[in-house]
Amino acid sequence: MPLPAHLTHRHGELHFEDVSLERLAREHGTPLFVYSRAAMLQSLAAYQRGLAGRSHLICYAMKANSSLAILQTLVNAGCGLDIVSGGELERALAAGCAPERIVFSGVGKTRAEMRRALDAGIGCFNVESRGELDVLDEVARSMGRRARVSIRVNPDVDAKTHPYISTGLKDNKFGIAHGEVLLTYRHAAACAGLEVVGIDCHIGSQITEAAPYLDAMDRVLDLVAAIEVDGLRLHHLDFGGGLGIDYNGDTPPAADTLWPRLLAKLDARGYGDRTVMIEPGRSIVGNAGVCLTEVLYTKPGEHKNFLIVDAAMNDLPRPAMYEAYHRIEPVRARENERPAVWDVVGPVCESGDWLGRERTLAVHPGDLLAVLSAGAYCMSMASNYNTRGRAAEVLVDGARATSIRRRESPADQMRLEMPLA
Ligand code: LLP
Image (cartoon, rainbow, N blue to C red; front, side):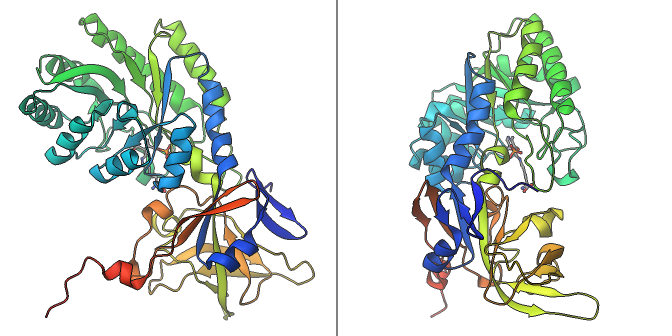
């Protein structure tokens, strides 16, 4: 299977762009996340090509990977940001994102988060319920402000993805049900503290087919038509994120072929003049990152062989949470050795602490492995379980490697605690 972009074997050894991964592991230790700037910008460029010539804003969904250097890279390349918490807002501002290029998504914004976001002057709140609209209206009026809002609609389409990451079905907690959308818009339009500027949807994540997007577009445009008959005009249409990546032979549509198809629908319905917004996360950074880990022990058994590595579910939670598949490649292949079949597991005291099952690998203790497609929803979901420090991160650009986050120490972890006297 071909490797993700900018990952190559050179002299039998894995490189990201022009940097040896073995060298990085030696210099920075493991587990270590390594990201390729070129891979990230290449994924972003596919969206930029797909939306070229349109009024548009690509708001990178920073929940996928919120490291400041990654945000800076994407903001400098023209992205706005999609945030879901007050914490993400502070990171977005610290990374230099213009506040008006920030959209605030999520079902549970607090009053304090709303106040801070209004104060900062963000571009739009993506509102998910009637209750939230009322609270936002009240908060904005108490500040003598008007909050720009878009209402997240639930188009009830099946994104055909893992149930935990499907968000556009009736049963999900997300968005306003199709049948209630019109009344909600009317209500919002009557609130003095709100300015209705858009509509948005997000149907799920790791979507690998075009059909759910095309269906969602039709359903959202039906709603736009109905809303505008009422006399409102929507300045922007936000179609969320969700486009999948190739983890294991997956074949999602390319952003630069999908978007012309979606825009054709928009044009055909007469909405081609509206600003198009999107919130991609995984498809920008997912395949632009790897996690390097060292093999600590081999533990052959009667029924299973275990490969115990120094990365764990606290660093790479996706297999434990979603039974997700991440390719695992040796950093330096042992060409002349017979491989064995291994379950790759971490040191955490849980049976669910696995990174890969039944992988065919020729490895010895001390060898390095690269867990691929680790740029999205790995570091941003990492935890300190078992008081394991979160990993270090390095950003590669051509032959240059820049440290963007140091490894978390036990002292870092205990910093906020107040031991009894
Ligand atoms: N916009 C909204 C409102 C979202 O809820 C999400 C992701 C995105 C944009 C970005 O979606 P993306 O382009 O990354 O698919 N932790 C899970 C994924 C959870 C996605 C949550 N929402 C995983 O590791 O698969």
